[in-house]
Image (cartoon, rainbow, N blue to C red):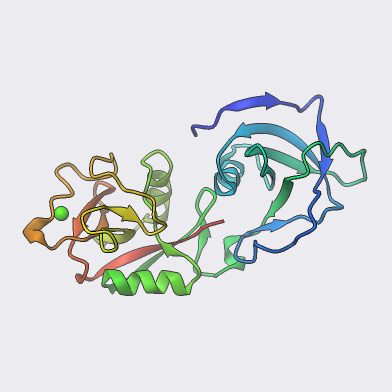
Length: 236
Ligand SMILES: [Ca+2]
């Protein structure tokens, strides 16, 4: 998983409540902000970088995890258990917010939860721009196939039984000529291990968009106007 467990506080549980005055900002999330009156016991603390990664860690735990808390100050992620009855409060970090998991289907019935994010496969063949637009109209984006460790297992699960050869994913070099990037602006190195061997090769000088070869689950640069099925992702 790549997360470093820095503390295990099951026996000496840190108890806190959410000290939040805002309930905004998670309308598209399947993780719903808990009201500030909710008492939460943090069970595991993880070093992390973002709320998305914290949610993913909760989803990826072998032990069922439906609640996590995230400190904006320290970026520490806490897997957590909600308490049924009021407990003493120890809010030594007012930036902590806690979230409870909701199903991807509550966002869009076509999407399912794959390790902390919502994915759907569409067999409808579209060009890159049209596929991207469809994902955006769902509130998401084309699949960010950034990591073999994290995204490949999700793709394998999502694509069980799929017989098409390739799907669009969300990376291109349309906005910045020559520079590959994911649709969230994250750079995509031309030597990333997610590329198929020998790619990107800009065959015939016309390959500006990335698709995923399903036989090897590696990406390839392809002509954007060709039509393929596609995978959409909604972030938590
Ligand atoms: Ca190519």
